[in-house]
Amino acid sequence: LLVSPVSAVELPRTEEEAYSRYISEKIRVYNIPENVFLAIVKYESRFNPNAINWNCWYGKKSMSCKKEDRHKAWSVDCGLLQINYRGKSCPKWYFDIDVNISQGINLYLERGFQPWNASKNGWGHLVLDV
Image (tube, rainbow, N blue to C red; front, side, top):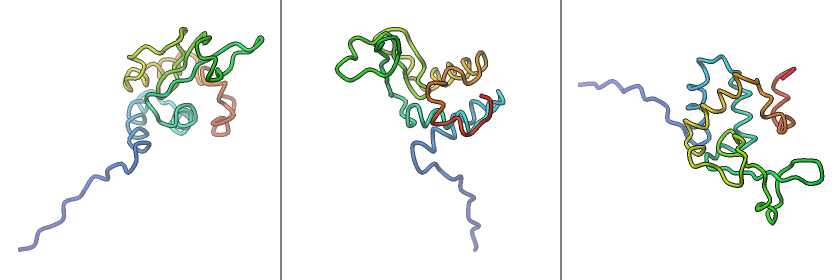
């Protein structure tokens, strides 16, 4: 008796690959450029759903806080897509990947890639006139 092999679904090899697939499925229906959206996630959070970056004013320019200045933060960037929140700490729901991705989709639909312009030097080469 011969048994035919079962066709296997290829499982993601890394967490980054798993998140990439999941995000791709979520954004596909909105016609969001997948390569750019995923590059933003990679550049902003390195696919870390718990990523946090604090924003401080230095002179008249807002930039990432020095570690010792985090208590002076005027806002924080939270989760996979580094969704900005005014305050010193991220609301816990921003670390829920579905909420974070939905917030990112909404930001894109409202303003294109503008919310991530500060990091455009890391992903902007993928698109023109973003």
